[in-house]
Image (cartoon, rainbow, N blue to C red; front, side, top):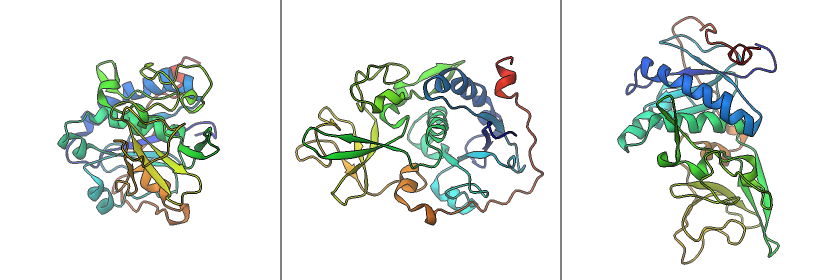
Length: 273
């Protein structure tokens, strides 16, 4: 693996999806990264499915398909991989319990780990009144609803915003499927993490409603349905964003089998270079 490559090992310790079901999603995910996301965000990765008890490829990032956050903690999937590298978590059991598409969540986590692998990027927006807000550099949260996604070879994947979503004054497109009509717009079912400068509230989550305008108002807003939620979901990217990096835990997963070998074609091979 060269310095220019990012390899993501896809693991499936869940009890609610088979290895075949998880592996079947990956060609569509790879195509989304190669064809759609890399053009907008100038980043890419090679996805490698790691079967059974095999150990992940050394130096790779991980995306783990798990039942829920309790199982993640019990198995030792913590904040980063055992090498201290980015780790994404897809809670398939939770998705299924709420009638959500696991493939959309997988796509969501994949794209966000590529755009902000250390969960430390944000954009400063200054309002007309001189106040300011930091907006987390999350590429799917604002348009995360399943109904906003799109299909690739029969697999539903998440829509995503472009960097121009974070750039008031620039023309669009602001998201890949062009659902949004302007920058920093939250669509139904969407949300974003913000940090109000000078308020001492830490990172808060704002959800979409008809009056949410990050350039004009703060959160929470009296009389608005927009909600600022202080406590993030366990295992989420927002939980890690609120946690000092020095407190992040490396994963302690024990793999019984041998180290997996790379089998999928590289990006250069996929593109015929």
